[in-house]
Length: 334
Image (cartoon, rainbow, N blue to C red; front, side, top):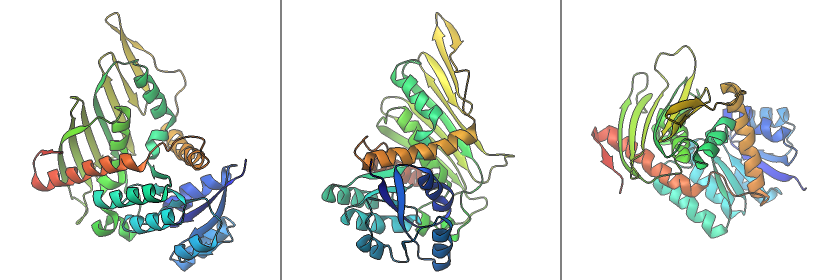
């Protein structure tokens, strides 16, 4: 099979630690070019990964290079313009979360994808955790009945120390955009994306000024299911804490650690597999699975697993979370 020719725009931490290493190890891809406005970073990273085609201006790269797809890992405020330019140049794209700064910008990217008939995948890597995919399969086969409540949270250090990361006009928000959007997507995906009815959120600014460093939300869905999310960069914790507990009418399940319990003849039976993946391995595997899925979508072997259309409804919820926190009240989603 012909290898997919991939370019990467933006050579920050996600590109350096995740996408470039995974692409370089993938037999179905070749890194054809990179683009980065920081000249020193561009030279250093291109040399490290032996990438000969390197550009400060991504538009020059799009015009000159023979590439099939682009991975966008720039600050969020640059996503919209870069994405639309890539789509216009007839490239499929994988873009890191969030897809854009706002619901409006997200819609513009989707309109461009439809206009130019290209594929857009959003980097929702938690869906690609092996344990999450197994849990989704168990839910789909009705092993734990109808899911009605998800309690989840993620407490860890700030994901990036780059200056743009805590500037609202560049990042779009704080811990909600960094961690909350991922765990929100995971909960909605496990529940098969129910329509959300209302949102109640409280944000905290203990160590930050313009963006929140802790957030707690209750999300009510129109099918009566409920999602409780807590995320933080600042809550005291000796180590990263990521958890998801899901309750169904016939049983329950959890991630990190992976556990499954099913009610059989009025007793709960442990259905947990004897082997379970560790948190660190599951997290690393999520990114390799994500890249494989993206390359498969570009090659026409599988559909886009985390499409832009879902990002539109997800961004609507995120904006409602911020509105609820600002107004200090429950907000209905129309």
